[in-house]
Image 1 (cartoon, rainbow, N blue to C red):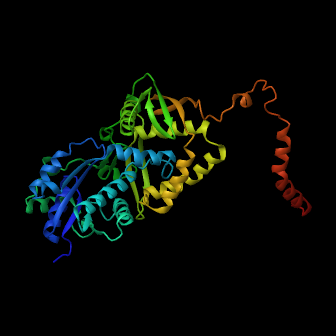
Image 2: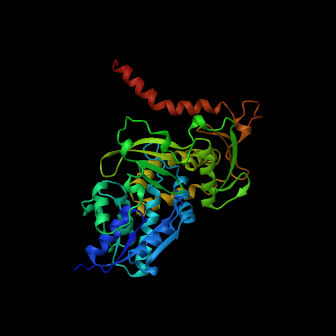
Image 3: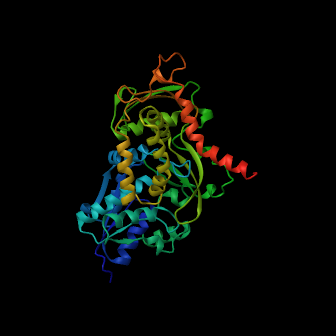
Length: 410
């Protein structure tokens, strides 16, 4: 008999987590609490409630939470303050959602008095690491049940057979093979993996993409967008003040319309293997370009360079599931401090897959001084003679080394 009396399951209502729900009930003989997160994936979530009820889940044990604003405000925006990119390209759309799901799993565990949490991540992927590192950081003694590390149901055929055997409803799309891709979506991105994409030499099919038109099919006319920043976060688009989730939703619509944000990537997974995935991150692509633009006029040079040095480390922490670690929190404190003067506006032009910065300014915090930077007469604002001594001082060590090399006959 298991010592687990109640478990909180991250539940989508799909085939995989429905199988897990039934397996938990049979294997652990325990009460199951289901948690379904609305992160802006664009799917109807109420069917998950109906399916949970069919499995005998008590109504008070079914949680369907709208986390869109919290997701963008407390996770996406802080990450973009660091201009975060993993391995030079990936904007971490899946990675950044996992710490919030882990947080809410633990919140519900505490609220319901559950003994354990469970998730549907496989033993090959990164998500198992992200969920569990987050859970242990927030509740060190929690028990984690990872069914795919125990179950031998890793093929679609075995999964369907288990569902049929246990009376789990199977939608027609699953019987017919469903989508050829494994997909994950939230307000920041949608990802595609598996099947056709497992050949890294094969081009992704145009019919796969859901959020963006191809750049070739994008409008022939460019569209201009004014983006307003306060302390490093976007607060308004074209003069309209919006909430964080509204900002990202609007940027996704505009970026998708203009074919912005497609990515085909082979990444290095935390567990050691290489994995090919395709991503659509239209809003995030605009955010990254615009944020660097506003920082270009408001951040001190060395502070900006320090941020660039720290960014790959920050990105790795997010990708590898260390959002709740003390080092990520420490880095975030530093990054947020640098954003106090990142206020102003950026104007971008969206055109056929491109985000082109055409203007940026800050009325209160700009470090751009046109009286010094001008190529015209600066009326003595900058003494060009000063550059001679600066150059000689910086060249001194190299001159000494060159003289030594010459004396030694080198």
